[in-house]
Image (cartoon, rainbow, N blue to C red; front, side, top):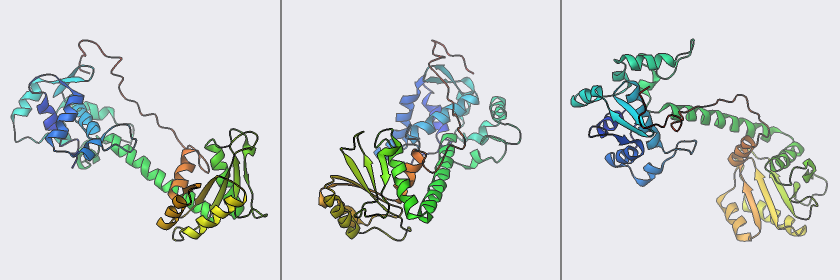
Length: 312
């Protein structure tokens, strides 16, 4: 199990007891110290930009620094302070955010995080940071994931209650937004119910429409799955049009036999189920838009990269 960043504080501090340490080396040391499996070592934050153990180790080091227990000496390197050594000697002390509050520097650090009535996770007293093992990065990304999950559910609800013609146009709009058919809005067309031979839309992959992708769209409720018969029918429709590429989209899901049928038929039929459809709509701003953009800043250590980096 990956330890939370407060559990990491003492071992991270102890890692510098014998001299300056490189933070990336300490990440590996913490992984070994806590016996993490390879899967745990490789586990990423929701952003996919950093491993969980690296993020938590960095935050542990950062909080120790704010309390004056360690100091940065150059880019990516830190060392223990005299205060840190004194605390490390007392094995009965649990080093966590609550303990760090006794130091004035840490209090000032938390006070800087306050803004009006809204405070950071480092608010004094029994704050969420004392109770929550997640780092601020993890908390923020988890909140973002919850917002996107709620948005995805709402998008699927709207799609399921839309008219058949609107849903078919939605799929065409999405594929054009994804870059299929180039930049021309006319590269995608919803065919509707007028003799479409089991095909709901078509996307031109080139300006002349020589190469085309045909679409099938099923506006189903979550409990109404798409079975293999639907895949075979779509395959037949593609054969009539002498098409080699097809995309089958549903707001529900495909049964395992339907997925196997698509593979067995050999034709390039791509299946997009409800969750993936919602994810693509969010990614390409179809049926939704940006409400607010938050810019998350981080220190540029390269800017401060000198032989001796004074403690902040």
